Image 1: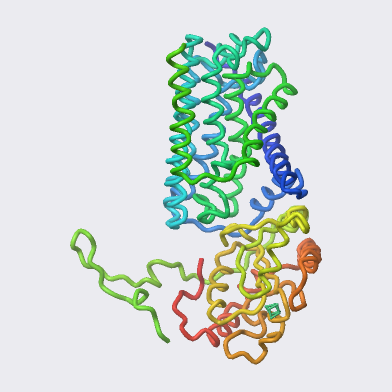
Image 2 (image 1 turned 180 degrees about the vertical axis):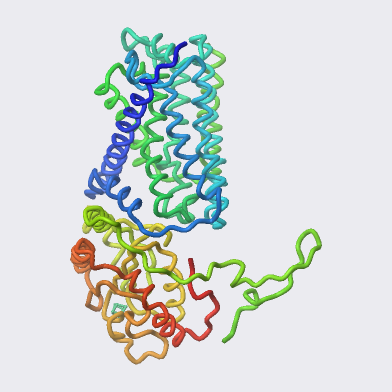
Length: 301
Length: 215
Ligand code: SF4
């Protein structure tokens, strides 16, 4: 296949749209959470202001090379995840750099950022960061397991590892969506989704009230700003995969915004209703509820 | 000056049997004094940053005296300070506003200094309550400091004993105008008058067992 250089600016445009959308959406979801607590909550542009402020701080200190690289790894994990997945189905402009085996690559990128973060936070030498990393990695590995199972089940179902092909197979009416053709896999994946969104009940890793704020304890200024960018980007990139795999993808930006919002709302909805799990509780929860669903979905395909 | 034994210079035997000398204050901390950090080159950029800094105040959650109890209601639906871009951070690294909420015993002052020095430039200090201004009702206590301004560069005082949460909200708005005008340069003031601040701090803290500047 001929590589089209024009794809690079298009991919950057996608990135720009998604980062801004992610920041607005993040604030919006927080506002919904605040409304449930009868507060007004932060303004929707607060994330943008925080970002400018953190880039604008004058001093920053370092704890070593890996401390620099941690946020960079994290961000490249998010960017990679987004860029190797077709964002808008059927659009030459926004299909990005997707290729035949991108499903496996996406699964890998989901983990890549967390590992970089673990190394960076470890180098900061702060005990709270180390505790946060341990908690984060164990919970995340467990939460990813049902998703991986669901992905295999879907790959078997459609006999392909290309996300573009999977989306194409789901076109032509809602009943063609994986949601209806393979409900068990979707159920397992949506439970795993809760675990990876860092919202309650699974936010023990990053919640400010727990061991102070977990892995990013020592991060500040521009490091923190990089991580904030990723915090805006990563959930959306993740949702794009879910949307493509289970909910028929999106053929235009309005459909994209709408579906992403609804999927995000699912985690917010669960988050405001249920209290926070400890790590061992959440691991047990995933093992009992989500993993059997995933196994079952593979068996049934 | 009494030093804790674990901070003394001593010989340590490593896991591989090699003995080496450790001087904790030198080896584990960076003792370089703070420097004055210039503003951005262009006026417009600095104004933009100042605006962003004013609209995004991240408070270090550190309660020293009785005034701390008045900060908690700000998170609740009745006062909801989040509306004004005020948020709480659990670590000094990410915070840029330090609220000294009331009387400060000399023991707590030590921790307050360490926390303040770990915050990143530019950083702001609010003194909450009369105790931070002139000692308040602890004016003749042997154990608390009287004027916070002698030890940390204060940008704003909120008077009262104790000030209501509304007074705090008004204080935040006042601080925002100061920041936007570019006058809240406490961190640079601290760096410029570093010796003076250190001398004052060491006069009241008798068991000084930390490096002179905590990065
Ligand atoms: S000013 Fe009053 S309320 Fe505040 S710390 Fe002092 S004595 Fe307590």
